[in-house]
Image 1: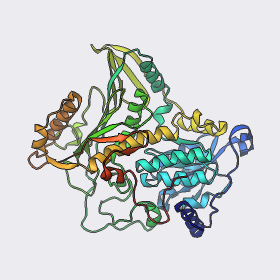
Image 2 (image 1 turned 180 degrees about the vertical axis):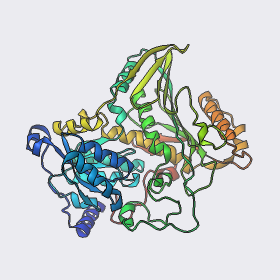
Image 3 (image 1 turned 60 degrees about the horizontal axis):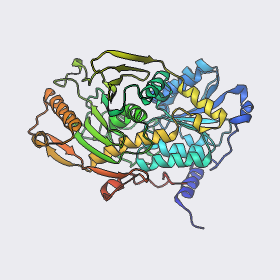
Image 4 (image 1 turned 90 degrees about the vertical axis):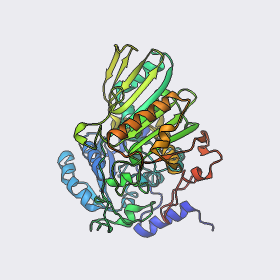
Length: 486
């Protein structure tokens, strides 16, 4: 018998944990939803860091769901949350180090994934293969290819898979998007997303740090390469290492990238991508850019996305962060007859060209409640943020990073000499230059990474005539932790 990679992965799971490869979860969708005890959805929360803790406590406070398991490779992460959850729901969840051990428990209807990014795709796929519904945090994937495979597995298994872009459930933003699409400001000319988020140095030590004794590091690495850690803090700062994270464009900026694409109504990847940026202001163990501009070309209108981790000036974070037309971490949608500012997760304001306010929206929503409703209906089209939406927006972040990674280094002086017929791009680069100078970055010693202009086959999600870029659409997976197609 020839064993494919998926079969090998499943047998590896069985051998190491004793979990059945494709257990049957109890039926909770459609007309059979009455079979659930007390009408509650049984949930396992996978990853109990900052975001996972939020989910665990939020679910425990609900009357329609219950936390059954807290799972984390570092048991010290889950321990403090156990009593908090018990206090809210009246029942203590079990703590499990290896999430795969809960996949054969038929009382678990759904999993909530809030692990580091490199685990999102494989964990989602294994859960759906086991009959579980999935709520997976953003970005839904660590790379473009595996994001598409989550979509394929969701459709193959007929499981509900919600993306953690909660802005999609904001009633205020839903109304603003529809208002713009109805043509109230004319045609969209361009969209600028900003992620001006304070990110200080994560430090760098000469010797690898000692890992927590409560941590199963091999399990934590999962699909990613096992590497020694030279940053000063183990948890959370994995975001700034391309081995496990996707920088701030893929961490915070994915929300704003998703809103930008949502306004445009684009349902595929951009056809051309350009990037310029780097990691400036300090030298540390991070390798993701803290300053970057990415240009995505769409037939409808371009999206320009700007990431900045440095403050307004002099590397002094007490001065606050930059803003672009009122947007710090937000989106500006420029139209023919005005613009819309989206400065938060729930609010938006429409302006005339003279600055007069035309319309304002501000109302949140229940994103996890929408997930539960879709589980009960059994229809993924009831989701506000179906996995396909999550994949497309995450992939825009990934293709921007790919353009950065294969770029060539250029000096700041060379950048200042660069000319462009695209006034939007030129203006964005000028503002970035001024920002870096305000923070005392030495342009004579600056090493900017300038990416090539990449052309993409948007439907097949591959780059055209660029093998270096195509290699970065996926990754080399560790044996036993391979993401495979259905």
